[in-house]
Length: 96
Image 1 (tube, rainbow, N blue to C red):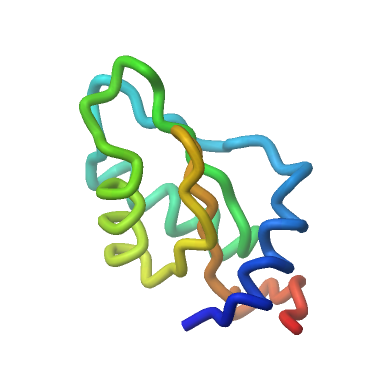
Image 2: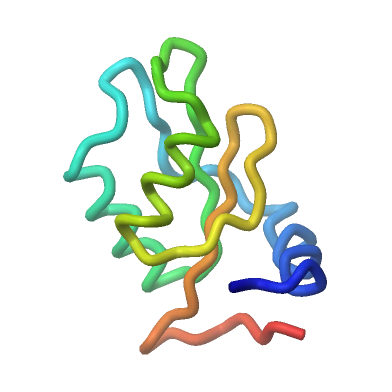
């Protein structure tokens, strides 16, 4: 689990990151979860955008993705989900 200090640090780091995945009316599927999982391994910190036409509730989608990818939810703000998972091979981010 991330501490509030660590989450604050990650939110600051995520400020300049663009969402690399979008969840639209097709919703969340296993293929997308696999791609998110791979991106987390490469980047550690990613943003996922929930589009207006999606039936997914951002907080519910965030929980689902986090559970399936073993990631931590840093923040859900509007339609944007910020996720973090420490990389096994590409460790870049040092947490406080």
